[in-house]
Image (tube, rainbow, N blue to C red; front, side, top):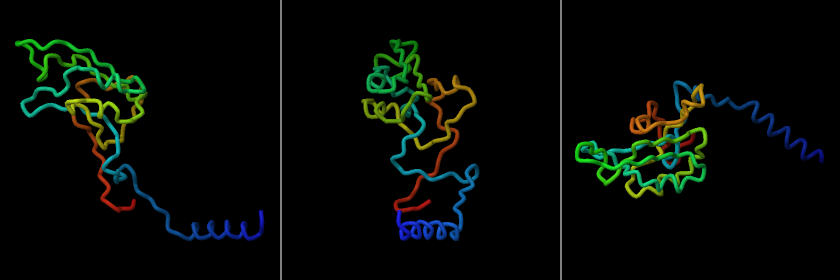
Length: 153
């Protein structure tokens, strides 16, 4: 390593030392995410209250991490949950195994599942990372702000 390389390295170090630190203040101020960011999963319903998920299990087949579990059941005239012939009686996603690839979102022919912008998913117990159908149908408790085009953090 030559003297010039060392001086160049020291120059970068001194410039960094003299610049003002960038502090975001995380809990109060969330880091904006890009519009294509893939975070927490969400199941959707139609305006009339019926679920979009028909229990076809295409998301299960597409998932490379094998973290989705769907148990389908037939709709009856007394119990109408979805617009199709079947509905997902059990829909669970193990967020500890999920790699947030978005394949489940792409595989769904009814746009029943999407990945939102929420990224605060930490829990104290691993069992709490298994999101049930009721948890997935509810909106995320904390939404992250979106980053505008060309915006720097």
